[in-house]
Image (spheres, rainbow, N blue to C red):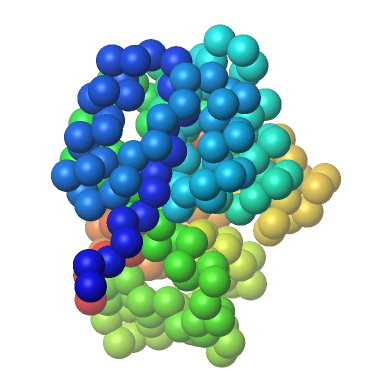
Length: 233
């Protein structure tokens, strides 16, 4: 019996974008649902419970960030924002508001497909018991023992470096904003002090990256935050 395809909802008022995305999603084995307004999108999302939502911010009846906020209050459906807004503040607002990722139009089909796969893997991982060991290529992070190994050799991290790395690794594949990291690692009073992150990320990369100037594990999302990458072992 063939597997039931996962549903992905497109909330975008531009019909050409929806016509472009539908075959792309169907070729990847998903079932595409469509909505042209925020209210229609919310009704479909809460009624059909798709595996993922692709959300435009510039909707005719309500702002996409408001749609995102209502979705987050009512469900844990992952949301990837697809928007022509390239401003960093919009990206940060969407990510802080609960989006798992943000792609600026125009975007490549391959990149979108990869982001969708990562977002769906995050949902699967979130529903499973917390894995005490996270492995990315030759990097091994043992959450229970507070140990990090690179190529079999233990890497000595400070408590802050370990907290920073473990929080990024637990959110592997997802963009984590500066403010989310500052709140998690240093507390609410550190919000706005991005220089803390620059210093500690630099130190962390010097310890875990084979080539710190070309990071494989902790990637920078310019002006927004950082993303921990899962490499093949």
